[in-house]
Length: 426
Image (cartoon, rainbow, N blue to C red):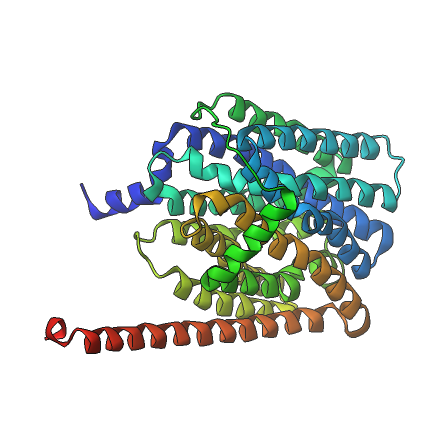
Protein backbone atom coordinates (compact mmCIF):
# COMPACT_ATOMS: atom_id res chain seq x y z
CA UNK A 1 0.00 0.00 0.00
CA UNK A 2 1.52 3.35 -1.06
CA UNK A 3 1.94 6.36 1.24
CA UNK A 4 -0.60 8.28 -0.87
CA UNK A 5 -3.16 5.48 -0.46
CA UNK A 6 -2.67 5.42 3.31
CA UNK A 7 -3.07 9.20 3.47
CA UNK A 8 -6.26 9.08 1.37
CA UNK A 9 -7.67 6.35 3.60
CA UNK A 10 -6.92 8.47 6.66
CA UNK A 11 -8.63 11.48 5.08
CA UNK A 12 -11.92 9.52 4.73
CA UNK A 13 -11.58 7.15 7.70
CA UNK A 14 -14.98 8.05 9.17
CA UNK A 15 -16.73 6.69 6.05
CA UNK A 16 -16.17 3.20 7.45
CA UNK A 17 -19.27 3.85 9.58
CA UNK A 18 -22.53 3.29 7.66
CA UNK A 19 -24.53 5.74 9.77
CA UNK A 20 -22.00 8.47 9.20
CA UNK A 21 -22.00 7.83 5.43
CA UNK A 22 -25.78 8.26 5.37
CA UNK A 23 -25.56 11.42 7.45
CA UNK A 24 -22.84 12.87 5.21
CA UNK A 25 -24.83 12.16 2.03
CA UNK A 26 -28.08 13.66 3.33
CA UNK A 27 -26.44 16.72 4.84
CA UNK A 28 -24.44 17.38 1.67
CA UNK A 29 -27.65 17.90 -0.31
CA UNK A 30 -29.36 19.86 2.45
CA UNK A 31 -26.43 22.21 2.99
CA UNK A 32 -26.32 23.19 -0.69
CA UNK A 33 -29.93 24.32 -0.27
CA UNK A 34 -29.06 26.11 2.97
CA UNK A 35 -26.28 28.13 1.32
CA UNK A 36 -28.54 28.92 -1.62
CA UNK A 37 -31.10 30.32 0.81
CA UNK A 38 -28.49 32.32 2.76
CA UNK A 39 -27.18 33.86 -0.45
CA UNK A 40 -30.67 34.64 -1.72
CA UNK A 41 -31.77 36.21 1.59
CA UNK A 42 -28.73 38.54 1.67
CA UNK A 43 -29.22 39.51 -1.98
CA UNK A 44 -32.96 40.12 -1.60
CA UNK A 45 -32.48 42.21 1.57
CA UNK A 46 -29.67 44.30 0.05
CA UNK A 47 -31.58 44.76 -3.21
CA UNK A 48 -34.63 46.00 -1.28
CA UNK A 49 -32.81 48.27 1.19
CA UNK A 50 -29.31 49.01 -0.24
CA UNK A 51 -28.19 49.10 3.39
CA UNK A 52 -25.22 47.29 4.95
CA UNK A 53 -26.87 47.95 8.31
CA UNK A 54 -29.87 45.86 7.24
CA UNK A 55 -27.50 43.03 6.27
CA UNK A 56 -26.29 43.10 9.87
CA UNK A 57 -29.87 43.13 11.15
CA UNK A 58 -30.64 40.08 8.96
CA UNK A 59 -27.69 38.17 10.43
CA UNK A 60 -28.83 39.20 13.92
CA UNK A 61 -32.37 37.94 13.27
CA UNK A 62 -31.18 34.53 12.07
CA UNK A 63 -28.56 33.87 14.77
CA UNK A 64 -29.45 35.71 17.98
CA UNK A 65 -32.46 33.45 18.76
CA UNK A 66 -30.01 30.54 18.66
CA UNK A 67 -27.99 32.33 21.34
CA UNK A 68 -31.05 32.82 23.53
CA UNK A 69 -32.23 29.21 23.35
CA UNK A 70 -28.99 27.24 22.81
CA UNK A 71 -28.45 26.44 26.50
CA UNK A 72 -31.93 24.93 26.67
CA UNK A 73 -31.16 23.11 23.42
CA UNK A 74 -28.04 21.62 25.05
CA UNK A 75 -30.02 20.37 28.04
CA UNK A 76 -32.65 18.87 25.71
CA UNK A 77 -29.86 17.10 23.81
CA UNK A 78 -28.50 15.56 27.05
CA UNK A 79 -31.90 14.68 28.53
CA UNK A 80 -33.73 13.22 25.54
CA UNK A 81 -33.15 11.03 22.49
CA UNK A 82 -30.82 13.10 20.28
CA UNK A 83 -31.86 11.20 17.18
CA UNK A 84 -35.54 12.13 17.63
CA UNK A 85 -34.63 15.73 18.52
CA UNK A 86 -32.62 16.01 15.30
CA UNK A 87 -35.42 14.47 13.22
CA UNK A 88 -37.91 16.99 14.65
CA UNK A 89 -35.62 19.97 14.00
CA UNK A 90 -35.05 18.89 10.39
CA UNK A 91 -38.80 18.62 9.78
CA UNK A 92 -39.27 22.05 11.38
CA UNK A 93 -36.52 23.46 9.13
CA UNK A 94 -38.32 22.05 6.09
CA UNK A 95 -41.51 23.84 7.18
CA UNK A 96 -39.63 27.12 7.70
CA UNK A 97 -37.98 26.90 4.28
CA UNK A 98 -41.33 26.01 2.68
CA UNK A 99 -43.03 29.06 4.19
CA UNK A 100 -40.23 31.31 2.96
CA UNK A 101 -40.43 29.79 -0.52
CA UNK A 102 -44.21 30.35 -0.69
CA UNK A 103 -43.77 33.95 0.47
CA UNK A 104 -41.16 34.74 -2.19
CA UNK A 105 -42.80 32.78 -5.03
CA UNK A 106 -46.05 34.72 -4.60
CA UNK A 107 -43.95 37.90 -4.87
CA UNK A 108 -45.75 39.59 -2.03
CA UNK A 109 -43.31 40.07 0.81
CA UNK A 110 -41.71 42.72 2.97
CA UNK A 111 -38.42 42.86 4.84
CA UNK A 112 -40.02 42.23 8.23
CA UNK A 113 -41.59 38.98 6.99
CA UNK A 114 -38.21 37.63 5.87
CA UNK A 115 -36.70 38.69 9.20
CA UNK A 116 -39.53 36.96 11.08
CA UNK A 117 -38.89 33.65 9.33
CA UNK A 118 -35.16 34.11 9.98
CA UNK A 119 -35.97 34.35 13.70
CA UNK A 120 -37.95 31.11 13.41
CA UNK A 121 -34.93 29.36 11.85
CA UNK A 122 -32.68 30.69 14.60
CA UNK A 123 -34.88 29.12 17.28
CA UNK A 124 -34.90 25.79 15.43
CA UNK A 125 -31.10 25.83 15.15
CA UNK A 126 -30.76 26.34 18.91
CA UNK A 127 -32.07 22.80 19.37
CA UNK A 128 -30.66 21.37 16.13
CA UNK A 129 -26.96 22.17 16.59
CA UNK A 130 -26.34 20.57 20.03
CA UNK A 131 -28.27 17.42 19.05
CA UNK A 132 -26.64 17.13 15.60
CA UNK A 133 -23.08 17.74 16.78
CA UNK A 134 -23.42 15.38 19.75
CA UNK A 135 -25.06 12.68 17.61
CA UNK A 136 -22.04 12.53 15.28
CA UNK A 137 -20.19 10.87 18.17
CA UNK A 138 -22.77 8.07 18.14
CA UNK A 139 -22.68 7.70 14.34
CA UNK A 140 -18.96 6.85 14.29
CA UNK A 141 -18.21 3.23 15.24
CA UNK A 142 -14.50 3.75 15.92
CA UNK A 143 -14.21 6.75 18.25
CA UNK A 144 -10.64 7.32 17.05
CA UNK A 145 -12.25 8.44 13.78
CA UNK A 146 -14.22 11.22 15.51
CA UNK A 147 -11.72 14.05 14.69
CA UNK A 148 -11.78 12.86 11.08
CA UNK A 149 -15.59 12.86 11.05
CA UNK A 150 -15.70 16.42 12.39
CA UNK A 151 -13.15 17.56 9.82
CA UNK A 152 -15.18 15.87 7.05
CA UNK A 153 -18.25 17.67 8.39
CA UNK A 154 -16.43 20.93 7.87
CA UNK A 155 -15.35 19.93 4.36
CA UNK A 156 -18.99 19.07 3.61
CA UNK A 157 -20.17 22.47 4.88
CA UNK A 158 -17.56 24.33 2.90
CA UNK A 159 -17.93 22.28 -0.28
CA UNK A 160 -21.62 23.17 -0.17
CA UNK A 161 -20.56 26.78 0.35
CA UNK A 162 -18.67 26.57 -2.94
CA UNK A 163 -21.60 25.05 -4.84
CA UNK A 164 -24.55 26.71 -3.07
CA UNK A 165 -23.79 30.43 -3.54
CA UNK A 166 -22.57 29.94 -7.12
CA UNK A 167 -25.70 27.96 -7.95
CA UNK A 168 -27.82 30.55 -6.15
CA UNK A 169 -26.31 33.35 -8.23
CA UNK A 170 -27.20 31.55 -11.46
CA UNK A 171 -30.71 30.66 -10.26
CA UNK A 172 -31.37 34.21 -9.00
CA UNK A 173 -30.64 35.61 -12.45
CA UNK A 174 -32.23 32.86 -14.56
CA UNK A 175 -35.24 31.70 -12.51
CA UNK A 176 -35.70 34.23 -9.70
CA UNK A 177 -35.17 34.23 -5.95
CA UNK A 178 -38.23 32.09 -5.16
CA UNK A 179 -36.67 29.02 -6.80
CA UNK A 180 -33.64 29.27 -4.45
CA UNK A 181 -35.92 29.06 -1.44
CA UNK A 182 -37.95 26.24 -2.98
CA UNK A 183 -34.80 24.18 -3.61
CA UNK A 184 -33.77 24.61 0.02
CA UNK A 185 -37.14 23.35 1.21
CA UNK A 186 -36.88 20.26 -1.01
CA UNK A 187 -33.28 19.60 0.08
CA UNK A 188 -34.41 18.78 3.63
CA UNK A 189 -36.12 15.66 2.26
CA UNK A 190 -32.64 14.18 1.64
CA UNK A 191 -31.41 14.59 5.21
CA UNK A 192 -34.71 13.35 6.70
CA UNK A 193 -34.52 10.21 4.54
CA UNK A 194 -30.90 9.61 5.57
CA UNK A 195 -31.88 9.85 9.25
CA UNK A 196 -34.73 7.37 8.77
CA UNK A 197 -32.32 4.87 7.15
CA UNK A 198 -29.87 4.89 10.06
CA UNK A 199 -29.48 2.01 12.49
CA UNK A 200 -28.37 3.51 15.79
CA UNK A 201 -28.09 1.67 19.13
CA UNK A 202 -31.34 1.55 21.08
CA UNK A 203 -31.86 4.68 23.14
CA UNK A 204 -31.44 4.09 26.85
CA UNK A 205 -33.33 6.55 28.96
CA UNK A 206 -31.40 7.94 31.94
CA UNK A 207 -32.72 9.41 35.14
CA UNK A 208 -32.21 13.14 35.55
CA UNK A 209 -32.75 14.07 39.21
CA UNK A 210 -31.91 17.73 38.55
CA UNK A 211 -34.22 20.14 36.75
CA UNK A 212 -33.23 22.09 33.64
CA UNK A 213 -31.68 24.96 35.59
CA UNK A 214 -29.78 22.56 37.80
CA UNK A 215 -28.25 20.91 34.76
CA UNK A 216 -27.35 24.28 33.27
CA UNK A 217 -25.56 25.15 36.50
CA UNK A 218 -23.79 21.80 36.38
CA UNK A 219 -22.57 22.60 32.85
CA UNK A 220 -21.16 25.97 33.99
CA UNK A 221 -19.38 24.29 36.90
CA UNK A 222 -17.84 21.80 34.48
CA UNK A 223 -16.43 24.64 32.36
CA UNK A 224 -14.88 26.23 35.45
CA UNK A 225 -13.13 22.93 36.20
CA UNK A 226 -11.83 22.62 32.62
CA UNK A 227 -10.14 25.95 31.74
CA UNK A 228 -8.73 24.56 28.49
CA UNK A 229 -12.26 24.16 27.09
CA UNK A 230 -13.32 27.53 28.55
CA UNK A 231 -10.41 29.22 26.74
CA UNK A 232 -11.40 27.68 23.39
CA UNK A 233 -14.96 28.94 23.87
CA UNK A 234 -13.69 32.42 24.78
CA UNK A 235 -11.53 32.59 21.63
CA UNK A 236 -14.44 31.42 19.47
CA UNK A 237 -16.67 34.05 21.09
CA UNK A 238 -14.20 36.84 20.28
CA UNK A 239 -13.75 35.64 16.70
CA UNK A 240 -17.53 35.34 16.26
CA UNK A 241 -18.09 38.86 17.60
CA UNK A 242 -15.32 40.74 15.84
CA UNK A 243 -14.31 38.78 12.72
CA UNK A 244 -16.75 36.15 11.41
CA UNK A 245 -19.50 38.74 10.62
CA UNK A 246 -17.29 39.93 7.72
CA UNK A 247 -19.56 37.93 5.36
CA UNK A 248 -22.39 40.42 5.94
CA UNK A 249 -20.45 42.88 3.77
CA UNK A 250 -19.90 40.59 0.76
CA UNK A 251 -23.08 41.78 -0.96
CA UNK A 252 -21.69 45.34 -0.79
CA UNK A 253 -18.45 44.28 -2.49
CA UNK A 254 -20.31 42.37 -5.21
CA UNK A 255 -22.75 45.17 -6.03
CA UNK A 256 -20.85 48.40 -5.31
CA UNK A 257 -17.12 47.62 -5.48
CA UNK A 258 -17.09 45.23 -8.45
CA UNK A 259 -20.34 46.55 -10.03
CA UNK A 260 -21.58 42.99 -10.31
CA UNK A 261 -24.81 41.03 -10.16
CA UNK A 262 -26.14 38.19 -8.04
CA UNK A 263 -23.69 35.86 -9.81
CA UNK A 264 -20.77 38.02 -8.65
CA UNK A 265 -22.03 37.75 -5.08
CA UNK A 266 -22.30 34.00 -5.42
CA UNK A 267 -18.80 33.67 -6.90
CA UNK A 268 -17.13 35.65 -4.07
CA UNK A 269 -18.95 33.58 -1.46
CA UNK A 270 -17.95 30.41 -3.32
CA UNK A 271 -14.25 31.35 -3.27
CA UNK A 272 -14.48 31.89 0.48
CA UNK A 273 -16.02 28.42 0.64
CA UNK A 274 -13.25 27.04 -1.59
CA UNK A 275 -10.62 28.24 0.86
CA UNK A 276 -12.55 26.80 3.78
CA UNK A 277 -12.99 23.48 1.94
CA UNK A 278 -9.25 23.24 1.28
CA UNK A 279 -8.63 24.02 4.94
CA UNK A 280 -11.04 21.30 6.01
CA UNK A 281 -9.38 18.71 3.75
CA UNK A 282 -6.01 19.79 5.18
CA UNK A 283 -7.35 19.20 8.69
CA UNK A 284 -8.91 15.84 7.78
CA UNK A 285 -5.52 14.69 6.45
CA UNK A 286 -3.70 15.38 9.72
CA UNK A 287 -2.30 12.43 11.64
CA UNK A 288 -3.85 11.38 14.93
CA UNK A 289 -2.36 13.45 17.74
CA UNK A 290 -1.65 16.52 15.56
CA UNK A 291 -1.26 19.78 17.50
CA UNK A 292 -4.68 21.25 16.74
CA UNK A 293 -4.15 24.22 19.07
CA UNK A 294 -1.11 25.29 17.05
CA UNK A 295 -3.06 24.86 13.79
CA UNK A 296 -5.85 27.02 15.22
CA UNK A 297 -3.35 29.75 16.17
CA UNK A 298 -1.66 29.81 12.76
CA UNK A 299 -4.94 29.78 10.83
CA UNK A 300 -6.28 32.67 12.91
CA UNK A 301 -3.37 34.73 11.60
CA UNK A 302 -4.05 33.48 8.05
CA UNK A 303 -7.71 34.49 8.46
CA UNK A 304 -6.77 38.01 9.54
CA UNK A 305 -4.20 38.44 6.76
CA UNK A 306 -6.74 37.33 4.12
CA UNK A 307 -9.32 39.86 5.31
CA UNK A 308 -6.79 42.70 5.41
CA UNK A 309 -5.65 41.97 1.87
CA UNK A 310 -9.25 41.64 0.60
CA UNK A 311 -10.60 44.75 2.34
CA UNK A 312 -9.29 47.42 -0.08
CA UNK A 313 -8.63 45.28 -3.16
CA UNK A 314 -10.40 46.51 -6.32
CA UNK A 315 -8.94 43.97 -8.74
CA UNK A 316 -11.54 41.21 -8.97
CA UNK A 317 -9.11 38.33 -9.57
CA UNK A 318 -6.84 39.29 -6.65
CA UNK A 319 -9.88 39.82 -4.44
CA UNK A 320 -11.02 36.24 -5.13
CA UNK A 321 -7.54 34.95 -4.26
CA UNK A 322 -7.55 36.86 -0.95
CA UNK A 323 -11.10 35.65 -0.23
CA UNK A 324 -9.81 32.08 -0.63
CA UNK A 325 -6.99 32.75 1.87
CA UNK A 326 -9.49 34.20 4.36
CA UNK A 327 -11.74 31.17 3.91
CA UNK A 328 -8.84 28.79 4.59
CA UNK A 329 -8.12 30.53 7.89
CA UNK A 330 -11.79 30.87 8.80
CA UNK A 331 -12.36 27.11 8.67
CA UNK A 332 -10.27 26.38 11.76
CA UNK A 333 -12.25 28.72 13.99
CA UNK A 334 -15.28 26.46 13.85
CA UNK A 335 -13.89 23.01 13.07
CA UNK A 336 -10.80 22.89 15.30
CA UNK A 337 -12.70 24.42 18.21
CA UNK A 338 -15.44 21.81 17.80
CA UNK A 339 -12.89 18.97 17.52
CA UNK A 340 -10.96 20.04 20.62
CA UNK A 341 -14.19 20.18 22.60
CA UNK A 342 -15.68 16.91 21.32
CA UNK A 343 -12.48 14.93 21.97
CA UNK A 344 -11.96 16.17 25.52
CA UNK A 345 -15.44 16.73 26.99
CA UNK A 346 -17.05 14.19 29.33
CA UNK A 347 -19.76 12.18 27.45
CA UNK A 348 -22.57 13.15 29.84
CA UNK A 349 -21.67 16.83 29.38
CA UNK A 350 -21.33 16.75 25.59
CA UNK A 351 -24.71 18.30 24.74
CA UNK A 352 -24.41 21.09 27.31
CA UNK A 353 -20.82 22.00 26.41
CA UNK A 354 -21.74 22.03 22.71
CA UNK A 355 -24.59 24.38 23.61
CA UNK A 356 -22.00 26.77 25.08
CA UNK A 357 -20.06 26.35 21.85
CA UNK A 358 -23.26 27.22 19.95
CA UNK A 359 -23.75 30.26 22.22
CA UNK A 360 -20.25 31.51 21.47
CA UNK A 361 -20.81 31.01 17.74
CA UNK A 362 -24.48 31.98 17.31
CA UNK A 363 -24.61 34.52 20.13
CA UNK A 364 -21.64 36.69 19.28
CA UNK A 365 -22.05 36.64 15.48
CA UNK A 366 -25.42 38.45 15.41
CA UNK A 367 -24.14 41.07 17.84
CA UNK A 368 -21.06 41.35 15.65
CA UNK A 369 -23.28 41.62 12.59
CA UNK A 370 -25.07 44.61 14.12
CA UNK A 371 -21.71 46.11 15.12
CA UNK A 372 -20.26 45.62 11.62
CA UNK A 373 -23.39 47.06 9.99
CA UNK A 374 -23.37 50.06 12.35
CA UNK A 375 -19.64 50.79 12.00
CA UNK A 376 -19.66 50.35 8.21
CA UNK A 377 -22.49 52.88 8.03
CA UNK A 378 -20.08 55.55 9.34
CA UNK A 379 -16.56 54.56 8.21
CA UNK A 380 -17.38 52.46 5.16
CA UNK A 381 -17.37 48.73 4.51
CA UNK A 382 -13.73 48.52 3.38
CA UNK A 383 -12.29 50.09 6.53
CA UNK A 384 -14.63 47.98 8.65
CA UNK A 385 -13.35 44.80 7.00
CA UNK A 386 -9.77 45.99 7.50
CA UNK A 387 -10.52 46.44 11.20
CA UNK A 388 -11.91 42.90 11.37
CA UNK A 389 -8.68 41.53 9.88
CA UNK A 390 -6.60 43.41 12.45
CA UNK A 391 -8.87 42.06 15.20
CA UNK A 392 -8.18 38.50 14.00
CA UNK A 393 -4.41 39.13 14.27
CA UNK A 394 -4.88 40.47 17.81
CA UNK A 395 -6.93 37.40 18.82
CA UNK A 396 -4.20 35.23 17.31
CA UNK A 397 -1.77 37.06 19.59
CA UNK A 398 -3.86 36.14 22.62
CA UNK A 399 -3.84 32.53 21.46
CA UNK A 400 -0.04 32.56 21.09
CA UNK A 401 0.28 33.91 24.64
CA UNK A 402 -1.94 31.10 25.95
CA UNK A 403 0.04 28.43 24.09
CA UNK A 404 3.29 29.86 25.44
CA UNK A 405 1.99 29.84 29.03
CA UNK A 406 0.68 26.30 28.56
CA UNK A 407 4.10 25.15 27.30
CA UNK A 408 5.92 26.81 30.21
CA UNK A 409 3.53 25.20 32.68
CA UNK A 410 4.20 21.75 31.22
CA UNK A 411 7.95 22.34 31.42
CA UNK A 412 7.65 23.45 35.06
CA UNK A 413 5.55 20.39 35.88
CA UNK A 414 8.19 18.14 34.32
CA UNK A 415 10.95 19.83 36.36
CA UNK A 416 8.95 19.40 39.57
CA UNK A 417 8.33 15.75 38.72
CA UNK A 418 12.04 15.18 38.12
CA UNK A 419 12.87 16.86 41.44
CA UNK A 420 10.40 14.62 43.25
CA UNK A 421 11.78 11.47 41.59
CA UNK A 422 15.50 12.21 40.93
CA UNK A 423 16.43 8.55 40.49
CA UNK A 424 13.81 8.10 37.74
CA UNK A 425 15.16 11.21 36.00
CA UNK A 426 18.62 9.63 35.96
